[in-house]
Image (cartoon, rainbow, N blue to C red; front, side, top):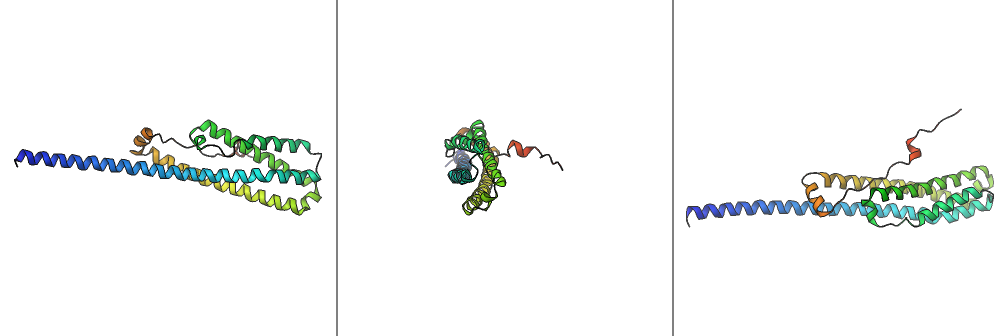
Length: 202
């Protein structure tokens, strides 16, 4: 074989190695994005699971409180309205994760339900017999545990979304992510009330 033929083979071999290396990096990056997006989806499912748990507890809490505080109709109406608004958006499609506006609406509805529940539980302070009711105490414990689970699930979701968002924004992953349709995920944020320090009066 001539010297030119050997040089051509070396060049073709080098190009093939470079192309295979780039392809392998691309495949690894793509698979990494898929894996991290699945972690976000799994964390999202857990958030929805905990919201569903809270949603299912509400009728029992309302019924128990109504037995002692039937004339607190405004509070019951607020809880019922908030629950009905949340009813259609507890288990939503994962597409909401790619739409910041839809994600914000979802969070606002869930935060509204949580706030109305807090108002309902505050009613118990005016009714000592209700505060001593074993059924109410058990439901209150379950709700408190559920709220804690929601906080943990939201935090885990935010951590998974942060890892995923960072991964798809790094170079050269960002190049692959844009072409493969991987989009940034939104985060759960604190409620508007939590952003403002409470006024303390003595």
